[in-house]
Length: 76
Image (tube, rainbow, N blue to C red; front, side):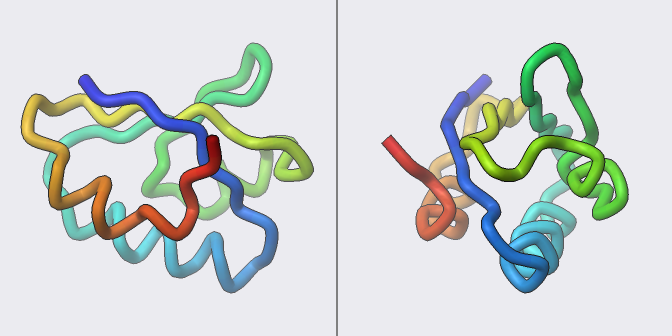
């Protein structure tokens, strides 16, 4: 399992993020506060508070390529 904080600050960013995540066959969740959604669901992502960073959880042991592809969204 790999965790990271990400920021999705525009509609275009959400679309690009979902298109990247959808290429992978493992589960990826996004959590904001007490809500968690499937990161492959555009509607689910828009139900979260996108004004703050969101916790990403990738359910895989080999997430290096995936993390490299989404690095533009990752915040410290």
